[in-house]
Image (cartoon, rainbow, N blue to C red; front, side):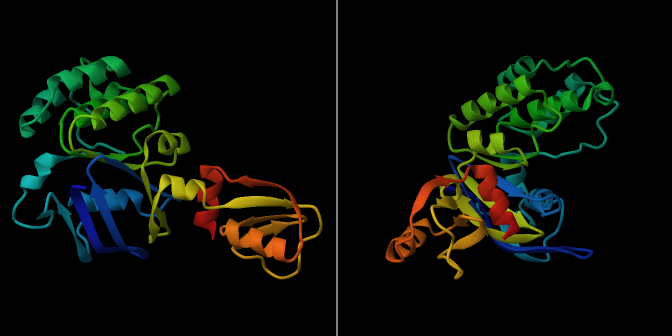
Length: 283
């Protein structure tokens, strides 16, 4: 599979916050979600990928070019939607398009119009006069239309109404179908992850816990309800227990142990993605 971007042993220290080391490969045809608690480093990682912040150690390559190197040609192959945009308040959507479009050789005007229409974005109002949700929609239209091979989206559905979120999911899904492309999305929304993500890059207080296939995390934890009291010793993969219930991240080993000890369970259930992520981030 074609690698569009690669992060190797990346570290960044800001005051008393330490991010990394992080290793992450962005493959064509995939959507990677950056997940973690507030302040875990998701936005910082996206800024580092755009060379808006300088790494202390490690490196980032986009299309085999180092983002901190002399060749800045990679900038036209990647589009970034930040959480907050500075300096746009005085301009209308039409003016912002006229500023941005010439900077991207592959700019797709039809795509811009499609997103504007789908999200009902007014182009004749100044950015500063728009609601937060409408500002977000306009920023996304101006980002997606750059027609790059990589999209970096920082909380793209923040402030957006429910119908617009669904339309955006459809837009991004369709966008991924056109050639070798990839999306890296920072989000707290489990629905966004469920609908879009192939991989989850999990961050906790700056530490990289790993990058997992979505299905792996969905099947990572299992909860059991026991007929009798739990044994006093720790069960294989045990994460938590309460009364006659326990959660394990090694269900096969736990079931073998229970069978060997002739302990019966009355029910078992794989935890959903949100519950699994909560346990992974709290372990």
